[in-house]
Image (cartoon, rainbow, N blue to C red; front, side):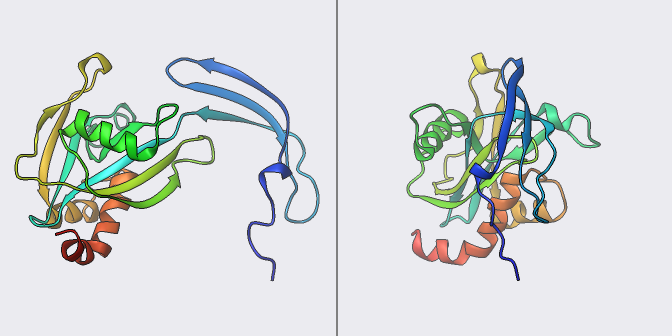
Length: 205
């Protein structure tokens, strides 16, 4: 039986690459070929690639109160769907050059929710939409106190308008099961919390 991952990045040959759009984000067009599983080479084909930097997301969790902090903000990508475009999400931000994901987590925790995480526990890294985007998410859970959490945050010059909500872990998990929370980072993090909640409540005291 053939095992997976027989091919590597250097098996892909990029014949040509050009930037077709440069704005807040970038779009490249690539002409490429790669080997097929049946032993032949794929004919040269084209793909558009959304060039977007990596990002870091954090689920703030208070193990003593068994509460999380979720951020409500407007998201343009949800506007075309049959739902409110104001989503409940995690603390999140783009990774800047020279910043570690942990540094991004702490910066965004302060900017978006007035929170500091101690400790931060890694959940996973995942590719958001690898069929057409370069973005990798670095996902964490961070211990916080929710005693004084909540309120309005965001950087006005970045057109951010954020309301931080304190939600019981039970209610947050229920919202992924009934579809009220339907963005990938929040779903993954809350399902991870559902699996690791007892351990965190015991070990994060």
